[in-house]
Image 1 (cartoon, one colour):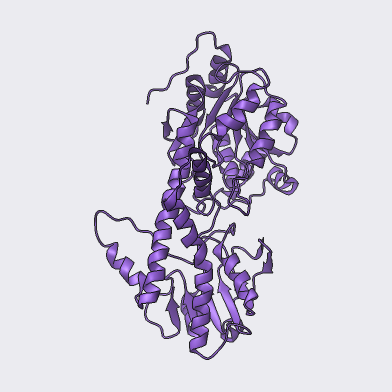
Image 2 (tube, rainbow, N blue to C red):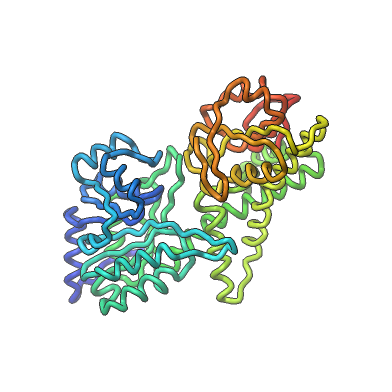
Length: 443
């Protein structure tokens, strides 16, 4: 797709492009989490002075001391960028007016009824509107439903009297962060960019191509927004199907892992997706429901999304039910049994426990009367959805006294041979323990 900036009578666009190309544009990143901080670092590495905006005072203080809190960012690299004043952080939103480029990387959660909560985007938009000036590029990266950029951000910003594509430039470029991925990071992951108009698209592409290897321009913000929710919905639906096959195999007395390992030897027409105790993280459990919610506006029912969500949300309950059956086979009720959960992060070798199925399983076990502890060196303290618990040391004594160990997250720092040797019985939900063991039951 050919992208150009129409310069006729658009001095603000030409001036901004010149600043971007000369790296004199000041870049502001709003939201310094798993998306915002890596992006800020990549932009600073190519020569932009970057200011991070975040209302979390602790996070701001940490960053200004050069202390890293995101595993995908190099400690030394961040420290050098802070020391050289290429990266700084503030909670003072009045400084937004000083930025030439503003990248919005704020959370987009769901409420209890699976309805999108866009309050963070709305709040940030109000802050930007209060100090919007000519010649600024605003780009939203937060995952959301198609139409958000135009319906919420553009509508509000144009109430200032400034016009998108002429006075300021507005784009949507979805984040594609995969925490813990050692092969693909911010720099070498293809970057989709859509905008409200051709001039905004040209400016946005010019900005992103300074630090990211390959840019994929699309025709509108709505297309770019749909790209993001499609990507995550694709994964959610396929994981839901894998989980449903796991539930069926459990009924039929088959090993779902043996079935899938054999199926995935086919060299065409299939793609590996595996079952588990549930889905976690900031994307798969949440993003598909943005599309599901928006579809209702068009009198359209997204059946696959609904069914996949139902199946995936059942998996923590299924895991606890299977744990109870395992204990029952040994003459022990779940109530009063000591259960050790191995891994509370939603993904292996990661310190992120957002929406982790381990939290739901922990709560369900406690509600059932079990005595529950967990071990996870990556997430030593969990505080979410009513669970406030600290990791225990994985001592021989802890393994021996547990009536059941439930392996939720496969971390590389756990000696699973030792765990298998010392544990009475194990429910392995990740197929992490290889070989035949009398005391190991797979999901």
